[in-house]
Length: 80
Picture 1 (cartoon, rainbow, N blue to C red):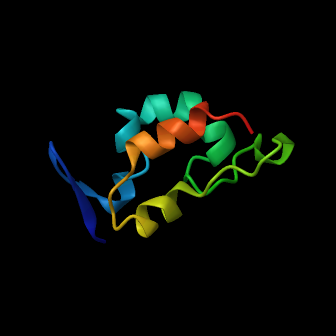
Picture 2: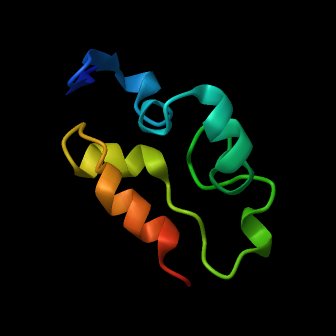
């Protein structure tokens, strides 16, 4: 699998979802209920939300392996 390059080095594709959130525990605590532990938008709370959570694996693919941190922060802060 291809990876992405960050200022700290190359990150494996499988780590792309969690790396921007600084640690797997932060992703698990704040994101996995909606996005699922695999980041595909199928978490246990996803069906009860007004808007379907994004498939974070698709975000990395669309952006050429670079996770758009500022764009994601804006999306998180914008009410649905």
